[in-house]
Image 1: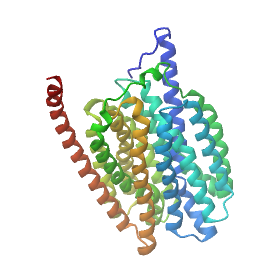
Image 2 (image 1 turned 30 degrees about the vertical axis):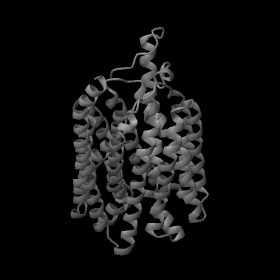
Image 3 (image 1 turned 60 degrees about the vertical axis):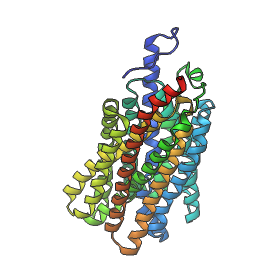
Image 4 (image 1 turned 120 degrees about the horizontal axis):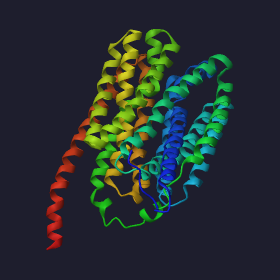
Length: 414
């Protein structure tokens, strides 16, 4: 990776150490954040049994968390452009631990909704922009690879944390499982968050005016947001319902949890690979490739019925879907200057999380009506096709903008 140079007074070895500490710490926190948001995929079963809630009611828990992520991402993203990163890390870490403790004490549906709203709005959404921006600020040419490694932690967490939670539920019950996860999260965050810092010279680099750059590129941000929404509707159905779908088809909850784990393990590799690929062929083409793989897999899921084929498809799906989040983050950074990145990322992720919540909830709603996931996956695949159309339009717009830029510059010079 190409590290960003800082003050000449700072030894190169110290810069290297601090940069890689940021990557390591941010990767761990990203794993815990995304893993926490995915917990409903395995807690759905015990909550349904104990309280008699429907699949759509429990699925809506994830939608509530994504609303917190969406709204919180905009607010905290803008704040992250202006305040000390340590303040945000303290707020976000506290929000994640407290929300898990609250879930362990759940007695009614509104309580678990509120806890997940806190998890999204005052927990992970506070941390997301600082994790990505701090990582990007330490690297220049290999920014895609660095961001890919950090976001790979999210894919790994979405598989490992629910898998661990499923084992805890089976051995000690769902309430004790939440308590154990809260304690493990507290310990891990205490070790990881102090590692996340910004380069010493970043304040000066974030100050210059953008001279209208953001305004001129706003249509690109709008199209990217539309693509992100459709993309996340597509991925929201399998992310929330893969455990239930595979468990139902194969009559095994363990196999259902294993399918999600396989998807996320391959997703971790996919995020690193797509980050590296983005550095070579471009951020937007890499996003298109990842989206095509994800969409194809979502259409194929209902056609399969064997455990081996479903696990194999989960591996391919995980590899493709994971690259989307890495590439979206990089595409935003390509459009806006560094000192406006947090706010712009928050706006794009607002609609992305809205799409994720919509996909997860509608998938459960359709299942409750038809007692089958086939239509849910078909609608998700259709959203994936809309995502590809939006990406294609964005590519056309960017080419047109690039052709017009020299002409505008000549007119201004004249």
